[in-house]
Amino acid sequence: MSNNIKEKIQTDLQQAKATGQLRSDRIREIVKAAVSQVASEFKAGSLELRTIVKDAVSAVMETVQERGSEIKEEVTASIEGVLEGVNSQRHENIAKTQTEIKRLQSQLDSEEEQLQKDVDVILAEIEETGKETSTSTKTVLDSVINGIKDSEEAALLKKRYAQLQAQLAIVRANLAARYGGRSEEVQNYLEDAKHWYNQARPQAENIAAQVEQKRSQLDDKLGEAGSAIARKERQLKQTLREVLLAAADLFKDKDHSDQPKLPRG
Image (cartoon, rainbow, N blue to C red):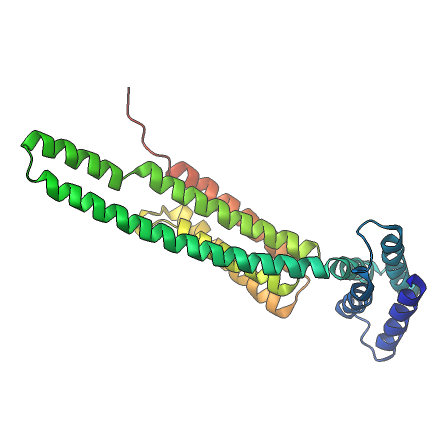
């Protein structure tokens, strides 16, 4: 089986070479296609799978060895193809799970929104009832109700949660791009990052100039990453890394500006 894989890869590489198409992206596709056909038959870490992986990379190196030391891109492409081929089924499962998570998150958001509406109705009824009580009691009720409505801690926790989810989505995009994830998988993670990032954004009038500049930079980086996916650029990994760093930098600054004011004791 292993020899068949090696022969198939070398045959396909020679055909690509004969037509002038032996580029790194084509090498990656050839290796991925060959490995993915048989990878699902073997257990991860098994001797058979390790042999297939070794022979797949070897097939590429033997084909391009006449180029001497200028084969880094080709070797990189062969390893990326192996990773994509070995993990193709796993990435499909991840994509399905991610779709289910999105559905559940949408359901959760809807239920939380309805819960908030129910709470608002109850508080409004209590506030209305308070109008019939004494002035002192009404003052206490109003104070309690306003405290529940305007909880800075609750608002800050929601923002922190959205920030963490945005950063986590960018981390997942980085991991998917680095370890053979499909472009659709990476794009889905970036869309998640945009969604949570928008949830974490404060109102424009409350943004300091420096934070606003970094927010704009993160917007630009997210756009660049999406464009790189569409063009299937090899620069994608570096762009995603810059997105992650930009998000971390922005949220770090916002952490200081969002700190709640503690009462003085």
